[in-house]
Length: 79
Image (cartoon, rainbow, N blue to C red; front, top):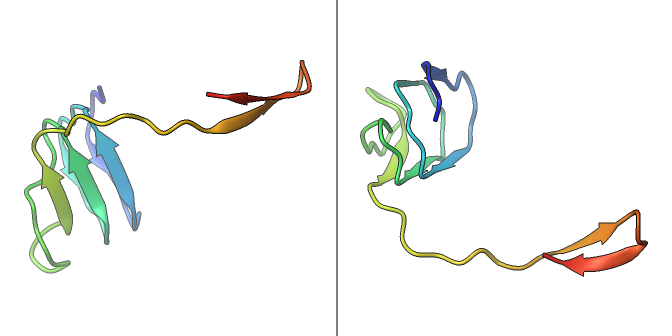
């Protein structure tokens, strides 16, 4: 949870999931919110509003596995 206003300034891309925002200000393009309380209203232009996509509820998803390298054991690990 963020406890104060978010000001994105000239940030061109943003993705937030399952969060709470007291207030959002700004944005250029590609502001995407899914399951975020306090997200700006959905708007499809950079005129007269923040250009953002707002999906009220996050769909059930499963994170994809990825490979990382452990410097201590010198082995690759699937996470």
